[in-house]
Image 1 (cartoon, helix red, strand yellow):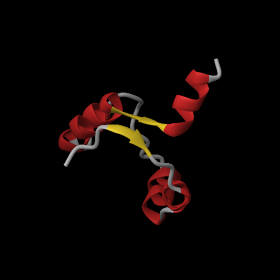
Image 2 (cartoon, one colour):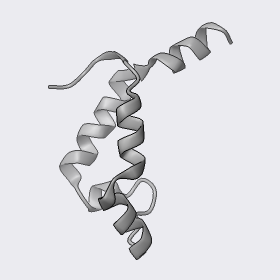
Image 3 (cartoon, helix red, strand yellow):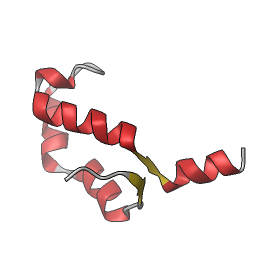
Image 4 (tube, helix red, strand yellow):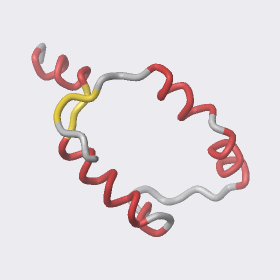
Length: 68
């Protein structure tokens, strides 16, 4: 199910995304995907993430907009 609106920040998500074993292995092996070419590795995930990014926003982005 697709989320619309404000995303709530997740400390657990931030930590786990940077310390995953799979990420470390791919990074150290040198198999880095060029920016904006994610559709080559996993087209379904690429499409989902593209829509998700356009339909939701973080709370910090909202705060920044208010105080700008």
